[in-house]
Length: 162
Ligand code: HEC
Ligand code: HEC
Image (cartoon, rainbow, N blue to C red; front, side, top):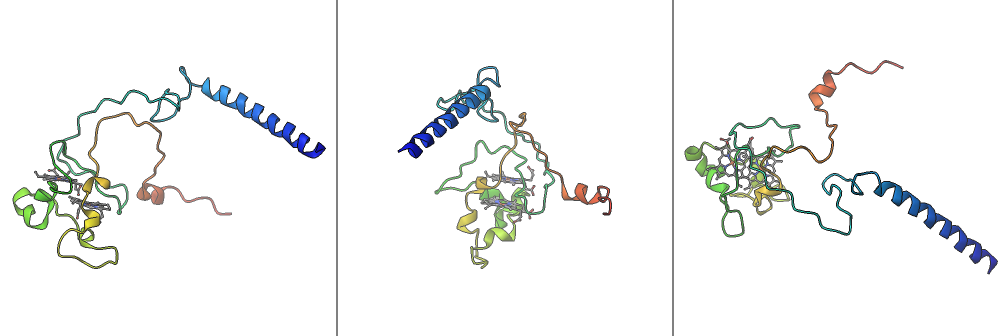
């Protein structure tokens, strides 16, 4: 009995400490908790939806940050239908359409099924293009990013020998 009483006391102490910590963090921003996309909105509330921004439409293909990166989309896709009935992306990016559209063809990986077999047309797992490819908008990033390109990393001064 005594032991469990003591444990109960200990865990209450723990709760009190947590309580203080959460008050401290909720005071860190002007209106409460500050975190990336949520901003100041308390966790149990839904904040206002951010405004939709115009999509970049430069038509200039962006360099990839690493070879396996799905290239970002350098044109607007606002008006293109992409659902189980219609894939408008393929009306330009499919093999037979690229002569007319001058769009880059979906690469051969898009024809592979999960066993590495090449199918005659785009594999179902590559059908919903925007799972991987995204248009760009001029926004201030919600969180910081310390990504360093591999070429930059390799050309950096070597670490001193031990
Ligand atoms: C009207 C034709 C057309 C349609 C429809 C279209 N694209 Fe494109 N896309 C292009 C062309 C042309 C380019 C080459 C760059 C440019 O001119 O914008 C391109 C470039 C791209 C690139 C960049 C490729 C690279 O190597 O950098 C991606 C990714 C892409 N499109 C994805 C899509 C997706 C996803 C959709 C559907 C939501 C789509 N496109 C619909 C014509 C089209
Ligand atoms: C599961 C993720 C995924 C999906 C879904 C997907 N892609 Fe890709 N895509 C990639 C990756 C990764 C690359 C770059 C490496 C490669 O070619 O596989 C790429 C490359 C491309 C390229 C550049 C090809 C080249 O040779 O330069 C185009 C264009 C493209 N995709 C268009 C599309 C279109 C259109 C769709 C929808 C029909 C689509 N992708 C669906 C991941 C995806």
